[in-house]
Image (cartoon, rainbow, N blue to C red; front, side, top):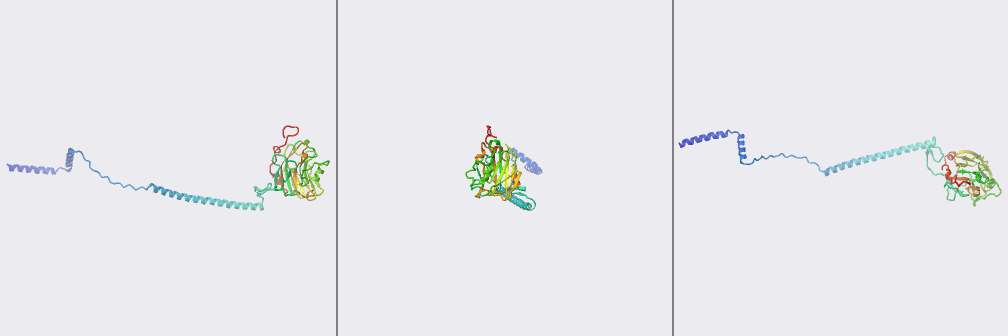
Amino acid sequence: MNTTSSTIQSAIARILGSKRSGIPSSTSSASSASASSASGPLKMPSLSMPSLSMPSLPSFSSSSAGFASAYSSASSASSAEGGSYFLRVIFYVFMYGFIGFLILILVHFTITPVFRFSPGDKGLIGIPGTSDSLVYWNNRVQPPPDDPVPKNKDDSLSGYSFVNKFSFSVDLYVRRLIDTAANKRIILYKADSTDVSGGLTESSGQDLSSHMQQNTSMILYLSDTNNLGLTFFCGASGTPYSIREIKNIPLYTPFRITVVVEDRLFTIYLNGRHVFQRIVPNVITSNSNRGGVQKFYSAPTWANNPSKTIFVQNFQVWPRAIRLSEVQSSLPALASVADFKASPEAGTPSSA
């Protein structure tokens, strides 16, 4: 009995063993999982992530330094190129300008005047230079009686003789002539400085021409009408050489008189227009026995009696005979009425 029951148990064990071995692994895994969940909390399997190797980035400091170095090199190259271009431009401008200047000089001296070295010269391009003329009586006031020109030894024209080969111009403003004695209307005169050192004395019984012949070498004056005259007294005897009087000069209107004196002739212009020319038989000389330096003088006091009617401004003097073109283009411009600062006319409360 005991033996039979043992045999039966062994057979059952073999059958159960064979069935367990035939169950798929998934079933067994599930059974294990169920058992595990039943026994405790679910544990997640550990996952291992693959390691990613990131590319290395350059540091900021090294990148900045490289960029600055590259920029500096580019800037240096650009500056060097720009500076070289600028120098080339300057060189070519100078070279072509110099060649053009040489061509202008060649044209000026061989074909036609190009440069204008003094007022009145022909030419298109004015060249600034020092003028050999001086302007006196140009400060908008009337010169004092017997005011000498040139002024003193420091004057650049003081050493010139002014016997011949000289020129002068003067702006005039003439008002009512009846306010001045008809035989005393002197505008200006020229004399040896030693002959009139104390001023030109008034004539005593002589006519104006005879009185001036003894004491002066030239006189610019108005006649007993509104005619303008110019006379030179030449040689030891004071031979007079006069122009034909300019008739009916403007009244109450400024005008300019220019006189050009050469060796044996003198010419007078009114507002740049040729009026008269006188040729003399001999070289123009002074009538002074002393042979001193000639000077120009404004009208003496007695020439403005009873009241002044002739006003002067812009007395310009050249130590040479100027050309017609210089006469017509000389500066300063003609003075205006206001420049003469004329005193009130006799019998009127206001100035002209």
